[in-house]
Figure 1 (cartoon, one colour):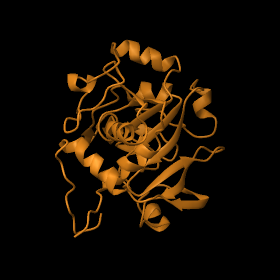
Figure 2: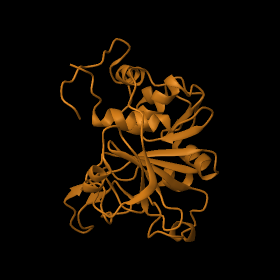
Figure 3: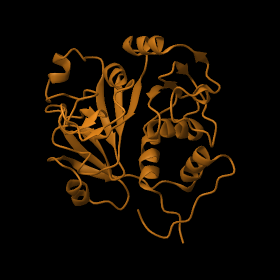
Figure 4: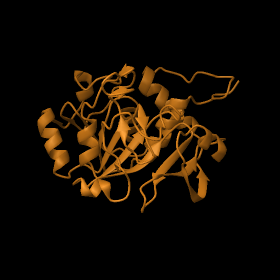
Length: 262
């Protein structure tokens, strides 16, 4: 039996590799925070994580990743404890390099829905809503979005725009006044996507190990642009998977062996 990473494992590892040292990332809880903490522990010790609760520079305790920014463990070893209003004012002032959020739905222009599934007046499902995601996506210089790759998530048009991507494409985001921030990457368990510079449509740029272009296209609910050269990402290393297991389960955690592939 060999260790086979889960869908979340490959997303989190790919996301962590996009975070470099001496940057500031405003991260949502869940996969974005795990990826940020993993980067901080492995290759970006001077990465500053910012959380919505007003915590600047926390160090996540292995085995205790917070599920909400209302938890005080989200503030562990922060260099500054401020308030929600203050931290969003810092974001609006252009002080954060990266914003990192999840998505329930995302469309070809990078618009994110975390509010409702179905018609606005009669939704089938009510989701958590924006929280600070709209502010993060509207204010941070570059935006990373992470989500599992399924047709029900990658849709032609989101049911509700919780957090704006490139809106209708082209210059729509700039015309809406969002000139200092832009979505740059969508990370999934199948691939990494960017955006065409002109049309702002989502574009396949890299594949997770063992994944084909056809598999990505089949799991996308809109016509996905394909970059001229699509590279394959390096497989998650044993060190990355081991450290991720520690973040989730504590310093004594070990990697589970899985006989089946993802």
